[in-house]
Length: 445
Ligand code: NDP
Ligand code: 2IT
Image (cartoon, rainbow, N blue to C red; front, side):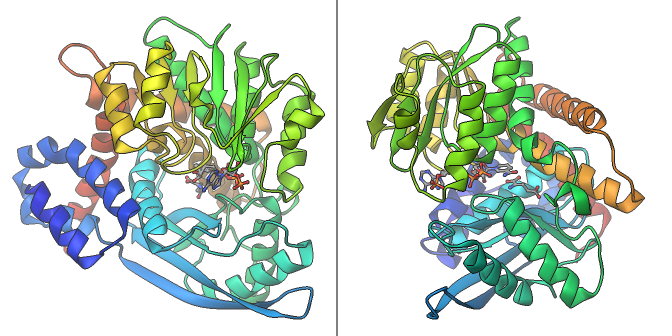
């Protein structure tokens, strides 16, 4: 495989799509050796076919604000690869959304979904719509306008969207209502649905719970546990919320949260009512974590800073891509951090990842660590197909089991000669092999 040729060609075809090119390079670097050992992949053009999405649709969403003014946003769906199952992946509503970000997320989703052991292909979508400061009625009108375009592309056997940044239970409800009206069917076309109308118990907690289950397995490889560990989290959204709950349950202490405005350091630990307060903070539609320090005065707010300067044993970035850079990584390692587990998608820059791997600390990449969210979406799809609902304990047990098997796959494919587990390599190779072999089986399509 000629990695530089592939990357140069891709960069020429898609100039300026930096996040997409970053995600592709990271995967190709890990699988280069595997591809070179299997020349039939090269002959079948597997890599060239894998790095371009099957199709991308962009559309315009016009919607009326409460003030009577009409607004226009862009909508997208990237259907990346459906070799092992229907396209599956979230929708992101955030002003930063563009094609590069959705293509990076869709590409990552292929390998993540492959790791889950469930039959799901990779896709992603979203809009540059900013839910912050919008009324419920505005959110509803936007979601309805978005679905009026999207509905023809999706279906329970074709493409099953879900939530991501800015898309939670409320948005999924509005999107689902419009889909149901247009398609005249009540099917499992979206996941993250309300439990009264086809949703799965534990789906809201699943990404955070799954991430902590994975980190627990990582620590166990060194005979260690979460008990007594100090943990830094970033973000204060759905993933950070689920992770904070589970870390507390396992005896760890969460000391930070963050938002675009900065981070809060709470030396007493973020537990109990403070975790409930995270939900209030998210629901307030404000763009900030600062109010946490008014509500709980023992916490200190650090304007414009990353939480990675705080001394911790475990760090879990749970906000957004490229939020942890080389300097942050050096701080963490210098301060004795032994484990970094990515709850968000690609939160560490390539330079930061290099620092972690060179320091030989435990480093779990997002596509393995945060796969519990989409895994539980897969479990929601299974329940929808069978037309039944599993109790919370059954979903949680299955989630736990899936996270352990993802960890095992990383160990199998990522253990180096000196015994160090390179989870980046392990996750990419394990995820890739299943998809590549499925593509081979299905011929040139
Ligand atoms: P939420 O919208 O619930 O929370 C996102 C968090 O990240 C918020 O704290 C948000 O603050 C912050 N954030 C968003 N954009 C930026 C930015 N540009 N700079 C700094 N902070 C930012 O989303 P989720 O918790 O669902 O998602 C968090 C991460 O986890 C994302 O990377 C997502 O792709 C990933 N993920 C989510 C899954 C899920 O099931 N929800 C599954 C797997 C991965 P604010 O909104 O105030 O900007
Ligand atoms: O990044 C992700 O895996 C998600 N946002 C969840 C996708 C899903 O289909 O549940």
